[in-house]
Image 1: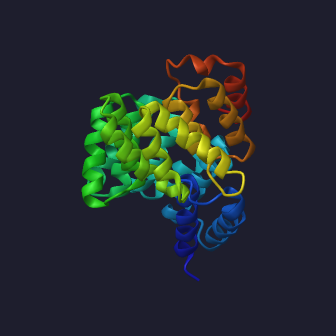
Image 2: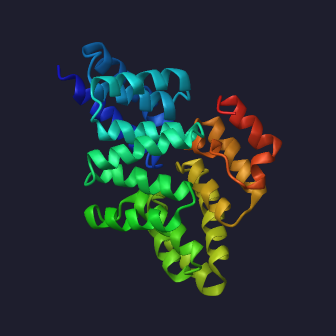
Length: 277
């Protein structure tokens, strides 16, 4: 039995869950089983330890155990670029920015042509408010891996920042293809033609709310749309839904910002309950 294969399959399923292609209800038990099997077979494999750390971070929200496994993984293989990218995001979620950038810059130095490293760094630049650096990394990523979903999301953010809404609409439609909602593109086109960008985003959000009653749509996707148009009531509603299903993107909202919504009692309580504030 080849232990890394079990860890590798669990990593693929975890990534699909993270990006909203599948629900936790569909894959969580399978991921747990694969992770346990891999660890039983090989407790000293850096990649397997990284996989356990990632699962503890984005599935279990078990920060203490996750960091323990990240450190074990990097002790065994200090040159593991992907482990350092995951650990950088773990540290960012903890608001330990200096340590996070130290890990990410080391990962880029170790493996500058790795699409996984580039995608994680692009996201980190974006969250840190470095929109153009995020876009630069995303454009490079797309040259290596066309239509990479993380690059699409970062470019969407860049075009919104620039108020280049014609390009933003293109990236929005690309990003929302992962929902597999067949009529969504026409909904966006009609709203953008007859209104404006915010109206197109709101129309896509309300359409997906209705669609999600019968089909899986990750709550974080709908939340992100309401965040774009600054609908705070809806953001909080969908953040609660993220909490209810342990959406793996929920920990990213613990990253401190100047957004007044972070002072809302519901927001604060959720962050406390997942152990980050």
